[in-house]
Length: 437
Image: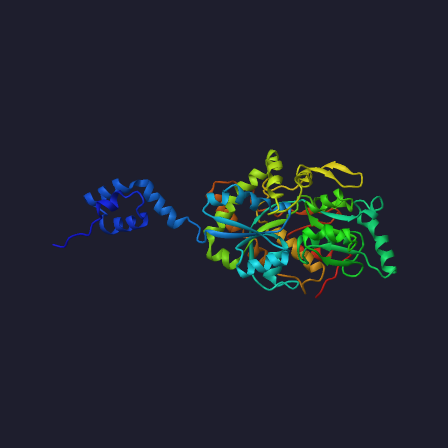
């Protein structure tokens, strides 16, 4: 009679035994009878559960390098890293600060970073191969924050231009007549700051491509460039608008939440290829970001947030300059002081859901300004990039009840209403536009 291979007593009791090996031997050789009973008594249900989890739930790629830019809205990634939340979900995180958005895009494309803090327009531009971006499909399964950017104008315009960009037009026209067009900066051509600046200028009857010079400057270099008189205004995230006021270089004309109440801003992005090959890794990252975002939206934690993200490793900025606007203490720098009803937030009001309508709005602006020829595939690209399925799966696994998809219209500061069901009509509806095809 054939003898049945068996487990040794050492294998049965070793506290650090390879649980996956034990499970396989159990299945092959001890499915029934006394052998099964002995083995089950030795390894126990907890070890079995650990074995199952290690093979079915662990991230495929546990070592993840996250990219960030020196802006307050990198906070969810930094907090998840600093407070061990990535580690909690099996991710060994490192955080790398990029020099500019193009460098961040290229690092994600090459694989030297696997996930990143990114402008919402960048994965769209890379997926579409838009405005000089190499075509590399990217996905957005998570929105990092809403609100918190601003348009700063040079100090010489204080008291002459307030919140209405129409007041800026005479200065633009005067500069044109002198042959010295006014210069405005944003951070990346198809990014959020470019679209906010274009929208603001367009609402003032100013053509951003013909009437002024629109240049690209990395966020952390906005202050130094304004200091040497290189530009008349810029759009960027915090803390650089508050820094311009503190340094007496400029004032805030409008915040971006003044332009579009509770608008989307930064995202956590991945290449489509990485997300496809590493679904458990991506979901683990989202779970950690969720915990970090909830922590961040406790206003009692905002001083600690600023102390952490203000370090030289991250933003390299005085905590006091970061904290004020995060608490909703909005000083425009020209005498206007208000309690901001829509300061930057990270979790509340269904903040993190990757709404397809947001991608659709950005594509409507690419269309409006002639960055695409003909109407883009609004619905198809939005569905490909805004990965609601990944987000919903991750939140279901931790039992979080999100607010779901929102297709309601949005109203802007110039009275325009965006209907996500008809983005082409929105793009065509402006007096100031540069449609192609």
